[in-house]
Length: 530
Image (cartoon, rainbow, N blue to C red; front, side):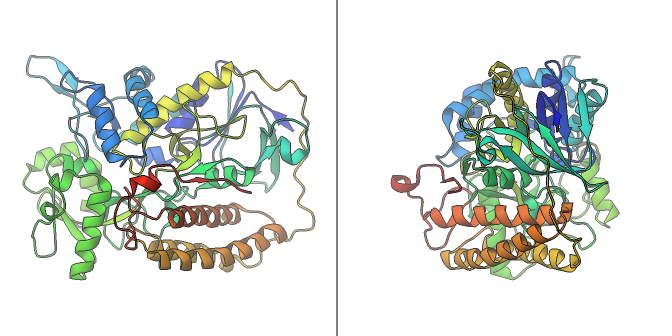
């Protein structure tokens, strides 16, 4: 057993921000299942939504967030994230994060604020079209030089260790975690009174996603198995514009492209968003994604097109260099031709239910970033609020975790025991089940749902869960097996939450209940393992 003051799982903006603050108060174990810089944060293109100009206000940002959340945002959480945002952004800039600036016409420079769907003002701080990479790089540089942080790369968390499972007569608490060292195959036992879950989302549960391969919902699945409350997993945000190209997978075309004037057209070159919403291309993401889905189904087309060719070529190349270069590599010159795009799974708005300081229902466990359900996003996330939430909640969780009195009881954790398990001899089964889950979720639990499709998905997932559990108990654990175990758990949570919401709201749209029902469903969907 190795003991730390803080254990942090995940190395995106939330996990890294917490680790840096906590390292001044004690020893930190920073666990990441790939390299330190591999995270959803690093893939974020658009930027960070924050009130930073005199033309904007907290109240406007709050209103935009509440409107996007379709009645399910918790206003206290929204207000906290938005009003505390500028101070947290200032901290990022002190740590070396750069945001684009522009000449204000008076010989001075000011932040070049972008605009995205659902925002009434320009408030998106960005670094070209690679904002997440800029933030990740700056935070990783700080982490690497801090003597109190032990970075454990290529280590994957298996399960939380709780006092309830150990038989202690006390309030059930998280007191540590089992972690697989991928290089050696050894499962290590880590002990701490503060465990911070910052593992990101579950985009890879779907066949088409903008997320990297690491996004397998590990944290939510672990928290569920440990008995923590999970909420709102039916609200999966599909980004409207993922590049449609056979050679390039999971490449996002940032919403900022539409914010700078790009329009959506069908295969005949006709604009169609004006028939779906007055805000057209700048409508909230759920509306735009459903409109594209409807257009593709109506025409039988495999994609629609995003056209920004009306903008000067130099502007496109300088504002969106990564998108321009990636598309050019695929044989598309976006200064001259429209970009083929399709919707793809992007962001989970639900997760581990927490208070305003990130603490889960399980004492000692904190969840921050995309893995958490704080009440900010409601039924639909407003563009670029996620990076803001990550850095704000990291600070709030740090404050509560360091104020909380540590466990007065000395707790020894048992070592991991593998028993008589064998090496996995049927890797093809893992691969097949992985693909079946992702195809099943895409076909039955996608942008538009029905009870019949959801029930079919639930039945098949129960069978898959039994198969995966048999594998888990009979074979040596590997990263692939653990990810499959987590995927089937999270997929089941999404389906169960979706089945319980008999209405259409935000990102959850069902043909059986096409209208919103505030009388019965103006509430979070809460799930807890019995």
